Length: 326
Image 1 (tube, rainbow, N blue to C red):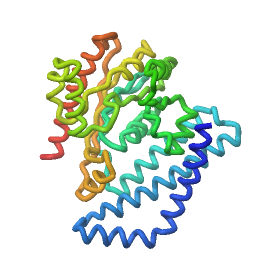
Image 2 (cartoon, rainbow, N blue to C red):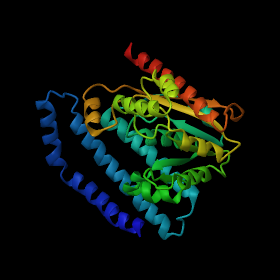
Image 3 (cartoon, rainbow, N blue to C red):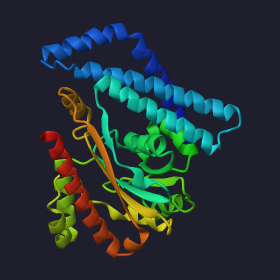
Image 4 (cartoon, helix red, strand yellow):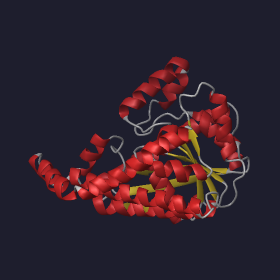
């Protein structure tokens, strides 16, 4: 019933938003351009953001309509068809992002992710991280990703419908019984094969300096030694290890891949997006490192190990940022 109530609102809302944004294009385009120019924003960030929103709305609408067609034709449980739809969705959105905002992908070092089964622990810096990792997995590697995502993303009807038909798990971060949530995460990776990658964002939320400070304070109250060790982080957030540990434990034969990227810094809020688009955007660089399962400890040692590799990823992000700052 919750699913029905949610979709009764979200699906018509998506279509109305897409139609309204297209119908009012002659109105909002000059108004947004004027507002940008008055503020001295010569790259027209508001225009760019609204243009991307227009493209996003129609791509999402096409995804929902295709999902409806698959349901009508009796293929709602056809994973291959839905992964093809996911590949199309991610590629179209990445193309729209490039055309409307100027954000482009300059480097993808992801060959080590294939073959599966692997668990990908990915940096979370922006609203676009899930899209980037989905594009890398589906378009660049031809793999079928399984995601651990926050339940709030079910408000997006395409993610809700298509994501619900594929082996993903939408985590309830406010659940009263966290053990049930972790068991569901563990089950998500249990039957993966060579073309599968399970993706989780161990930080649990988009990184920012304020969030990093708060996280370190909380960790310091429980484990001062760990907080001191992680205090050198400059870009990433300290990990929340429980979900990653469960996902790794669910597939004993899976290697672990650490994924990090630069270029989406500051895109964690809509205000940040506008500021980011006001200047020439930094190119996107995606990198990864595969770690053999034999080198991944279990139990209590997993947290210390994950902290160490996350500190290494933080250093790698810092080095990539310096490349584009030269």
